[in-house]
Figure 1 (tube, rainbow, N blue to C red):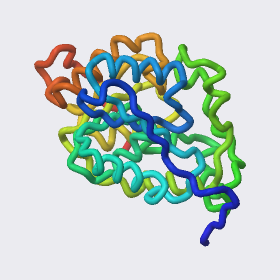
Figure 2: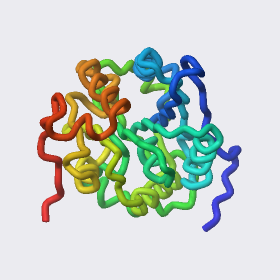
Figure 3: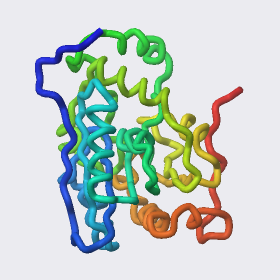
Figure 4: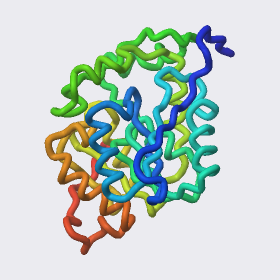
Length: 259
């Protein structure tokens, strides 16, 4: 069914931070995150201090066409500017996985699977079939699930509901993920309740996975300085920074689904 939403077509928004003469880094934010949120601003400031010219991509929160409203504009931006290094978080990680470009990527808690259980898991297939862009479904995201340092005002700044059309296009994108690229690295929290950790583990080779202490947003967690150090190492040196023999190279067994 072709949707005819009343609102204008959603689009991405990009802001630039740091010295334009520094190395370009595309940072695709997660759903509902904005560059002026204190926790996001903290990470962007650290990235610019480390010598990156950060292009921060703010994503629509209620799109219904993943390719045209999310992936295509981000891909065009990267190609226009010749950017070859991408950092992404959550929904941004889903966008990054679909870019199909010769760029090196670092994923932070990517939303590659739905974290559903019980009644929600049974109801989800029915809800996402509803032909509407109206925000009817509670997001289920809480301050506690994002990180100890997340401000309540930042949570309130994001929509508290999502539409069936948005859930449908996200699910389709998750089901059509391209193969994992071996030079990319994924950071994840074993206690993350926002995204499906098992999907991350099933999709990513153990040698490309880096666990961290905290919740969904490492940059809103109390251990963020320690995690940031590892992220910066990976941005600089690639997957070799987390392979056996590298400093702090020991990793826990990645989560897997039961057979």
